[in-house]
Picture (cartoon, rainbow, N blue to C red):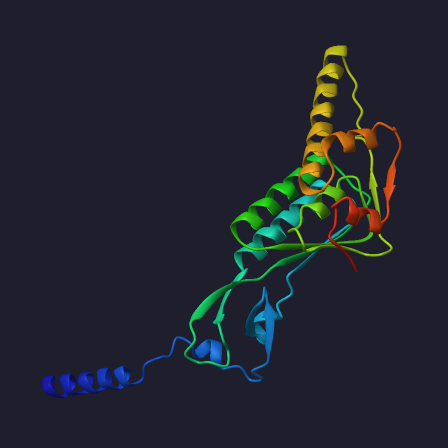
Length: 236
């Protein structure tokens, strides 16, 4: 009984050894073998068809901000896939491809704090993981403008009929004079930070943005002007 068990075990091991798994198997066994380009690298079609789009449509609220942040973090965690550098060559090396995230933006704006939360996570994703393509469609106003501009340079697009709008930070305060003074200081900080971020992501200087906002009215910008000012890179 002992010898028989040992013999059987030896045969199983030999069989297992003969049947080695090719690490490329999952990459090679595609039904249609169609190829697409992701970030200038060829990859199997089925790996590229996953929807990686976020819609920022409507006012930027706390709930909307949390949804956008959660979507960014999830898509960041699924950004990497493996593929053959040359799909036609089964001996070519296996490489890691980073799939981009697309954000479509159409908003009248919203709260500055939730805008900041989205921008911080966008910056983290771009620096650590993958590109973010932004698309301005319909209207991109107020807090939505820095989000459009914060996309990966060269990957920021705007609809030809989209309107951009900039204005000063709006807020209200009540209570004691000390409380109102404190709130005014906070509003000034938000305004300065908004200008600083927009200047960083666009071709505009902080002085130019401040001059535009000193008119004390809403500043409307066409798609063509948005490209010239560096808020977007291309008109679609």
